[in-house]
Image (cartoon, rainbow, N blue to C red; front, side, top):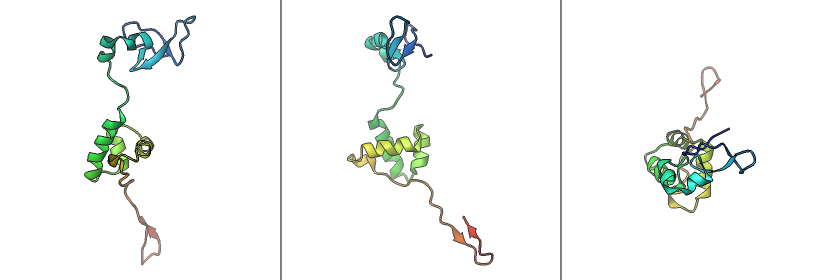
Length: 117
């Protein structure tokens, strides 16, 4: 069970359960009460990056010739998560798909007749 990262340190859950002493998780690893306190909230950074930041970074990387697989690794997310974000924001000009990854075309060796990657 996770605990609030704020000063209260209460156990966190998806729903609050006052009888068991469990507070609801409200973001940034904080319970609802600590999240409402602006001073506490500002001391705890966001866990997830907003879509605007990811789209800006993706646009720069895509223009530099970075594939989606490499970009996802640099951003710290999976390729599927990056693809879903780009699909969700497909009307944004920064969300062009770009290359998926290196393209391997199998070629047949003329002497042996075997396929070579």
